[in-house]
Image 1 (cartoon, rainbow, N blue to C red):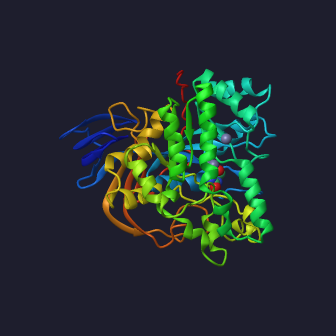
Image 2 (tube, helix red, strand yellow):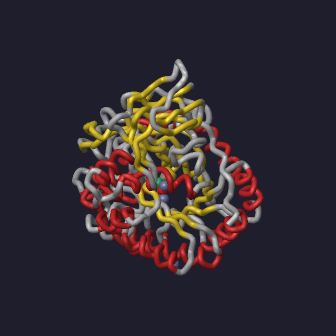
Image 3 (cartoon, rainbow, N blue to C red):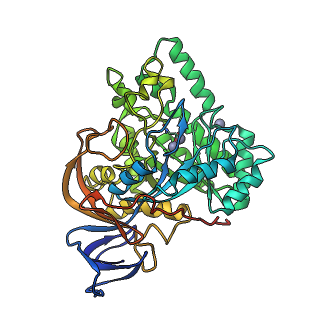
Length: 460
Ligand code: URP
Ligand code: ZN
Ligand code: ZN
Ligand code: ZN
């Protein structure tokens, strides 16, 4: 398959210029003006369009047994939705429970993607227990091509690790050259505040945020930073929701801690009032850490514009409103946490970030693609447009206008957190390793064509 993309505006994390891109087989073969292509080449006129590297979502949940239920998507619905939104590579959290064997869990999670995903995919290996059996199993998983771990400082008794386990995980990660991604909230404070609020009769979704206030998250980050400083491990804070948490990480960075910061799209575009909507509507907006008060949004945008925040992920964790969020109608602590966002991450970031002038196009590409590739061992195969890189490309039409709705989205959930919102632009064409997966905004790819991406540890 040969593909020639003519006359597009090529945007990477650092460059912005007009040229043609020739894709031969799975990779980019040439970039330049007035390229010629052999007969039979499919030619796409990208005049007036943005040509960007395929987006990488470094934090998704697809197979997720959680809070008494399972996340709604499978790799069929999730990868189709991701691709329509321009995301060509998914990094899923492999999240075994404490009683599950890590090797078996890794094989199970991989089996859910293989043969079904239309996106390329890899995993952060969740370390939810650390005993004497754990290190050899984690070594085997790293050898199989998984160059990152995930720990939870929240959800104690289910995914959460204690401080001894955290310390040992970071020590091993440092030895192996594996970066550790971490969910940072102080679980003791969460549990105590939940109990206090429930005892006061405060049971609705609007009490989710007060049960996990900003201080709880900042303390979680500070805690991880201390452990990272004393072990030398490289760490990545997932779903950072507020300035206090970012500041705790930046303070540590000034002390020499190797820390990268992720935020997720809900925190940039939604505020706390959504979870305060009546008739249990607020449950649609319950995720952890919670969506914060509106004053946090400009602070997060500024941290993104300065690139102190490296990545914008989704933390896609889809649960139906009718059947699943409903489980917590009388008790907010039982509402399955998560918001379905895999489809709209980049279009929302473009609409509310680039089109409003909050971030540059280069920063947009950096945060939705390049940084994830660099941090997680996929660069320069993914995350940029260069000769030899995988031909994962998004041709974005900035003139398109549309409306987000559950009635038309590709995700399996019965609601959209962004129902009726206007979107500026859309991925018109998307390719995965040279194959067209989205044409005129519609999925035309092949389920099962996605590959497991083997990644090398960094040996820092
Ligand atoms: O609310 C969230 N974030 N749900 C998914 C699990 C996690 O903590 O990432
Ligand atoms: Zn989390
Ligand atoms: Zn602490
Ligand atoms: Zn998550």
